Image 1 (cartoon, rainbow, N blue to C red):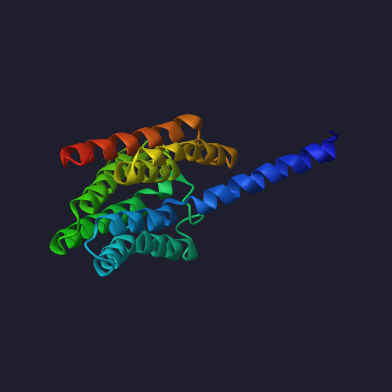
Image 2: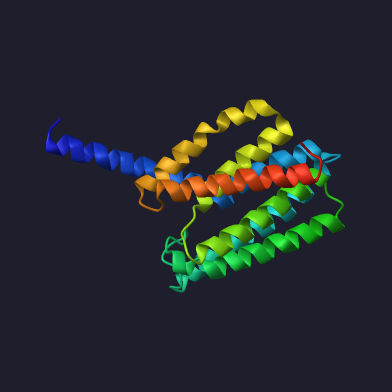
Length: 205
């Protein structure tokens, strides 16, 4: 392989890594994840859709709009909020939104499984917020690992076969120079441990 071919190959891998990073953004992963949980645990489709809209509205849509507004105003470099020092305010806003979702779901008498999942998101977000003050932990990996863990717990162990996706996302975040392997591993560990712990607390294991 000559130099030109090697450069072309590297560019191809870079494009793939950026694509993976985009489609596995945590705010996007939340949409199918919470829909699956709502459909599985709601008494009917109407309740499932109501719970889903409330959940993704607070956990995904509101934080994303907040970040995009910040990007337009020049507060953040990009919609991934790539610079660690810029992450604290959007993280705090996201945690507040998640807390509000948790309260609304309690009022709506949502399923205990959905409430436990949102609580896990809230706790993981709080831990990640504390860490982010000093170290750039990977939210992509928190989102992906948390999603696979909760879907596996709710739908059955066969879905744990999706865990290799975590490695792919970790590679992509490393490839685009957004995170180190250790930061990706830390995000994965937090998501899995918090989700399993909360589900155990609610006797859902």
